Amino acid sequence: MTQSAGSIRFILNDREVVLDSLKPTSTLLDFLRLERRLTGTKEGCAEGDCGACTVLVGRLSGDDLVYEGVNACIRFTGSLNATHVVTVEHLAAKDGTLHPVQQAMVDYHGSQCGFCTPGFVMSLYGLWLSNDNPGRADIEKALQGNLCRCTGYEPIIRAAEAVAQARPNAVFDPILKVRADVRAKLAVMRSQETITISDGDSTLIIPGSAAALADTLAAHPMATIVAGSTDVGLWVTKQMRALNPVIFINGIDDLQSIRRTEDGLSIGAGVSYSAAFSAISESYPAFGRMLDRLGGEQVRNMGTIGGNIANGSPIGDSPPPLIALGASVTLRSTAGQRTVPLEDYFIDYGRQDRTPGEFVESIFIPPLPKDDRFAVYKISKRRDEDISALCGAFRMTLDRENRVMDARIAFGGMAGTPKRAKTVEAALIGKTWNEETVTLAQPAFEIDFQPLTDWRATAAYRTLTAKNLLLRFFLETSGERAEIKRFEVVA
Picture 1 (cartoon, one colour):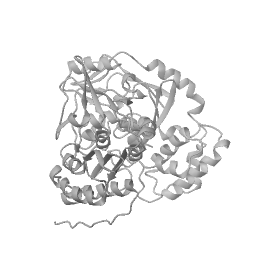
Picture 2 (tube, one colour; picture 1 turned 180 degrees about the horizontal axis):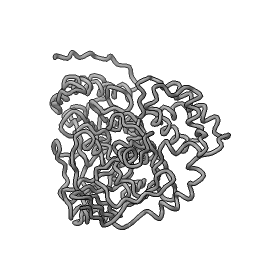
Picture 3 (tube, one colour; picture 1 turned 45 degrees about the vertical axis):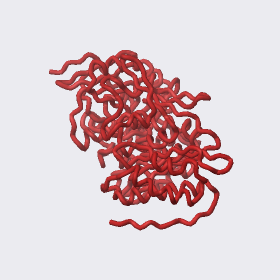
Picture 4 (cartoon, helix red, strand yellow; picture 1 turned 90 degrees about the vertical axis):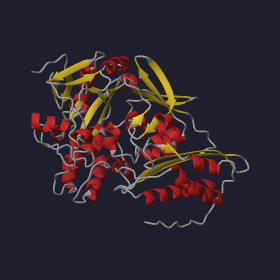
């Protein structure tokens, strides 16, 4: 028997949806296809990789209404309270006239077998809403999260370029004409009260504030907290895990703040990669460039830096640069707050310094001194939308005599946790920053790390690459030419 102590409300295309019974692991894709028969949204990979399931989700950000492409296959329906979900069926006019984005796909032969086409259309529509005059780089970034097995990217890009030029003559748009009305409706749907929905033996909870989250987690210390679901979603779609209870935190305003002061940058745990991109890129450009390669646009719109930290994955891309920058994490519970250096937060594989009832509230990054050298390198099988084989971050302070005064080197993918290369650092500090120093320090990587071999890379490859990244860092920061040594890998 289903019992409910609340309901979630959102807008689906042009109709309001109220759900008072819902399983916490119900995906938006299944809701659209099975419950509402909106079958234009496709299931391809079921892991947020191919983009065939792309839809737009509009949310309030302050007084603004922001629409972002997301992967419906790993987005949980319970996370949609006070949002506007837009599917491909909503784009054409009621008389059948195609939206300019759709028409351009027809005119420029952007669809081949057609399976991936709705996802491409929705990604381009998201770009249409956010950028009046996109260049090719903007278009390619918008399409990072969409894959086409027919290799039809060039016609799709031409369609996107054409629709940008035709924009002033666009006759209609299904969102622009109702934007103010949707904004007002979503404002009414937002709730500061905690929403609890029970469906059989399963429960989902949506706290209205950070304080309510602390109370909820104290009552359910073993609950699964879901922010962006870019990782947790795969627990359900690939591992078939039953999660109960689930606490959705993506709608908590308290966790959405970005504050920059002279002391540094503070980022709320609920801030997505996309939302944090501008602030991070401005203060730490190398970190920002790496974020552009973290997943596709849909993943960056959903995933959060706080979630990447809380999950504790050894191959998470954000911890290495954050550790190199000396970041700290603030944890919160009903007992209060405590702040720990991020490098100390990761204890062992699957273990973090977080007690039952605690959650990651925010991340603080100190300013980067203007004379410090800083670089981030992501190594993966494909450049975009891929999980790293390893990710390295390097930060160095030199004195006037070109001696290394301080060094912070951190890697993901080299150990059971994101970890500093402290032996390598010690081999560099106090030495002149030159190729000889780098060459003498490289063997220390074998002391700091004993990486695993898996399908992404062998242990030998990871060790060799870490050594070569130190040399790359030297070449890029010294302004000198150096002889690149070749290291032999013994299988």
